Length: 280
View 1: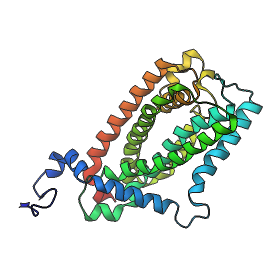
View 2: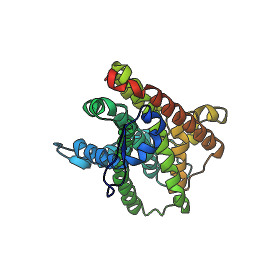
View 3: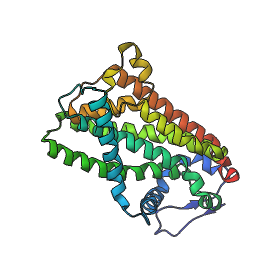
View 4: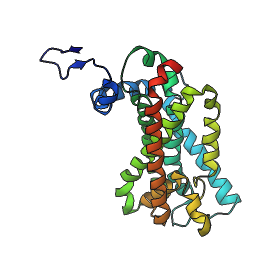
């Protein structure tokens, strides 16, 4: 059955058997406005009826930076391999980690939070977790402004490598998106999995070089450590912003892991997508 809208419309609505599979990626583009609608809604809901509102995007990374600076610099006596103040090194690592953890937390629960929408109307379900990851970019942008303020405070001029920062932001997005797709699909099928996700995020913070430099890891462990894809991303942020040394072998390994996570996440999500409405 085919229904055609008037000639003034941008596209036609076509109803046919198996269309969702044959035209899935094309439908993602046709429903692109839904990205904006869901992202803007999530931003408003996140800070609705909160005392400090968007200030939480500033307070959380600042407090974490202060604690990590005291623990790893003053108590553990770890050094920064670059010439930037230790607090700047920590905050430069906090930026991608905060984006990743927020995106993972929001996207993993996004389908369950939109159960009414999923069960009533067709659209590519991939849009929902993707919009949650996009929403987390707002917090990232706010935190980046704090980094700029900190640079003025410490009278620190960023490295010329900063022109490559968008590359690492895209990698952080792909990493959060790939892992988030897998977790949100699992979360729909096994509801008690949502209790494990905060533990995964908390555990990830301790095995990720946020409060310290990855240079403290011994050479024989670097390849194993690079299995954590956020290692290469955080090292890349510090290389771009602070000019810290970059282990390119570990970075390439991290990029490969990110691509594997992305493929697994998209594949598993598409495999489970048809059962989302029934499971929810």
